[in-house]
Image 1 (cartoon, rainbow, N blue to C red):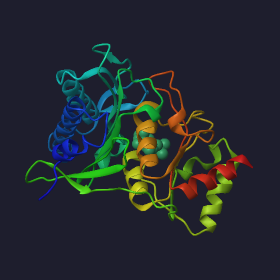
Image 2: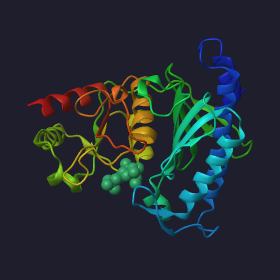
Image 3: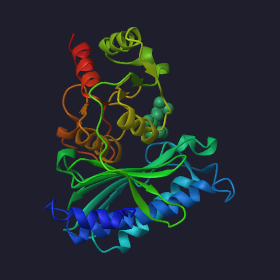
Length: 310
Ligand code: P6P
């Protein structure tokens, strides 16, 4: 008998102290929102929602219509579920404060949006804290992403390992498909945008990448964080978006990209670092602050730190 997301969560209540009915309801509401987004993504070209909305977001990036739609779907869901105290989104300059206590949700509604029009995997990333969004990643109660690829898959951690659920188009349920996702100690893939090689701030990073090439590693880079992290989780290796001369703190945002993805990677047995410390130990000050991201299998991350320390 297939295990649904809901039955999985109720079953885990016994083992995970902070997993109460309210958190289960919230995760299910987020799951429902991603089902709606998945349906829109798969029909995007038909719904004429492709292409730019003709606006730019707080990041100064061109906003795709599907970004706006995904943001509205999640925002509306979170506001209505009655369990949320604060909401932060990549698409909104300021956080929404609904109450002083409840679950604080930070999300990237449609990460990798530059890939929307060319039908490459994109995704929704979410992070759940208690009360306040601006907290170190280690304090997350839950984090996850949904990748809209050949299938729609939700990868989730509640702080006790990592699991995956695949959306069954027939039943409309997320069904348990990856009961325990564990990162290999060492992989054979590195993932970084080498076009920026000359702009990387640290010479040690260029030496590290050349070392991996010497070790016959393969380069895989989608340019959609959810796709690159999903492959890293399942195949091992390392994903890097470093600081460079243009993005001196890196490009990826802490709250709804780096922090939840680092939590997932570390919960799956891997490591995360900004180059100086675990991403999970960064104390955020600004909603949309960026951090350098080095995440993946233990061996590759530790080796990277050795080269950066030289
Ligand atoms: P670049 C997508 O726009 C994104 O925020 C992440 O999903 C992705 O990892 C990164 O930017 C890609 O950036 O500079 O390599 O195109």
